[in-house]
Length: 335
Image (cartoon, rainbow, N blue to C red):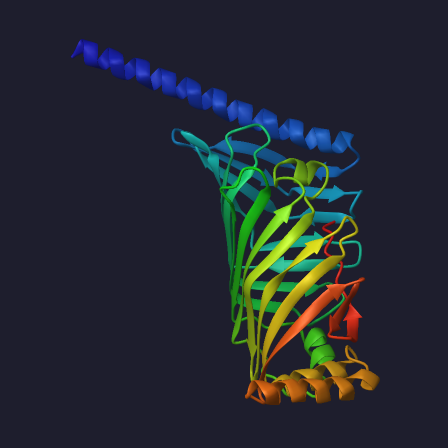
């Protein structure tokens, strides 16, 4: 019995020492990281930093954290933020956000609210903390620009990412799904000025594989975001009332963020989509008639006048349908 008590005592002291050393190292590491950001010219503040969770977890809580990167103009602040880890598996992290937070870009500030936003992420057990897989979920998500009374809403949102087994490239498979997605009234008015569509989308999801120029690790926050180089859309889908769009295809992205390649859109009730593009100003009147006639001929040849596969070519910084230029291609560079 004495021997058993001795063993238990030694193990308990060893585990307490391990937890104490680990929690102290975690706190010092976070304090150092914030100081390094301040030395680099960032705003990087918090009012308190605590590590609790003995004996099985390291639960780090930041009170009133605030970060602002002068190089990109991006900023974030919240009443608190938590990073939770198991003491025996420190490379598996749980991040917990508060119900309200502020995200700022060079163009706008956004109030973000949710009832439960958290992420589970597994990183490589190295100092660079390279992402292996991530699942982020949010319930009752609201994103509202501070100069607008019309927020974007989602009853539930899920974002998942996983590094592919190919170790020679920085490739990640991304999945996104939103339930009860309701775009802001400002955006709806721009797209659908006649208010012919319902408030919410019936479905919004995407399955995409992206190759970046470097891995997603701690340097993505500290220095620069990884930039996409190849985007392979396996399937992206949006259903909104009588309209339905599915997309698949692949583009490459140059250093300026300009995509080149082809994405095929499968459109149901495509004439309504063309009309929305025309009334919103996205598609000039001078092109709309010619485009509708051409697409109408293609749909007749395909045997289904309401559904049409539309190949969109990305080249020269523009989006084309055959010889017809539609609009400028989006810039895909990440700030």
